[in-house]
Image (cartoon, rainbow, N blue to C red; front, side):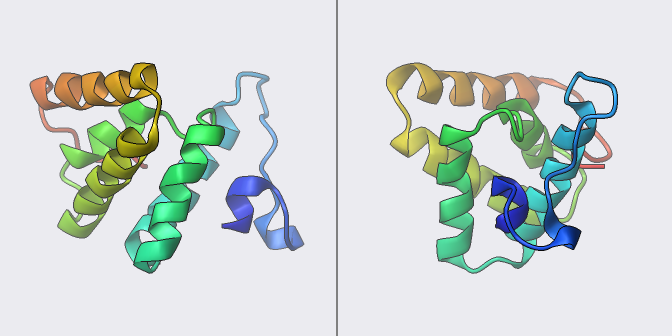
Length: 117
């Protein structure tokens, strides 16, 4: 989880955006979150989902929603849905509605190869 909050060793430090748009950091954070979702224990996954409420710039709700409906491994898709559910359940009404809207929108799109690559 240190990669998500910018602390820890050199190998886990926050990636700086190369183009000023945050795209590089966001991609790195999405990959870090995918690893937590795939290999983390339930409390770790829950903490990661709750952290997204405080730092939503790390990974967009649409990225997680797209992952749910992608062709990624079932465990990643299920745990992305789990993270969205935890976040929506603890979010304010506006954020919870935004998360649900992203899930609905992603469900209407053709299935993508992968949202986290």
